[in-house]
Length: 118
Image (cartoon, rainbow, N blue to C red; front, side, top):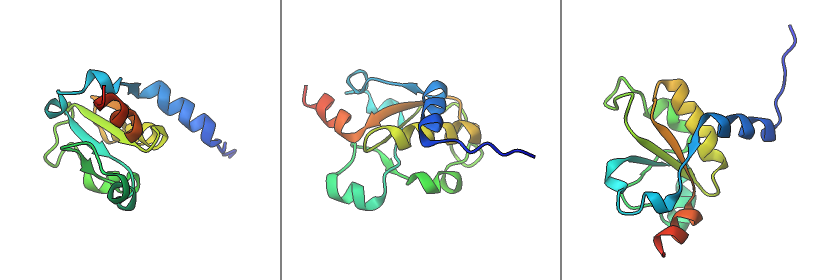
């Protein structure tokens, strides 16, 4: 059996083809319509803050903390973000694999900060 090992670039391209990006400007003022998940590590959140109302669930813990069958309907509108958008794209794929159907990538926290200043 041949096992194909993917490079990170391939994984990110694949993730970005499966998880739609959303422009942070289109979300400003509508944050309460989404479950926003910050997939950065707690130390990153502590250092730079997070989107108001977001939940910090590090990427490595998504499978353990978020399940459609446990309080989150599968069609919950979810936005994921990280520092620059790469981990968020990968996390979006994980959430879709868990059964969530309405997942989009908000990108990086700096993108959010820039958009909220406009």
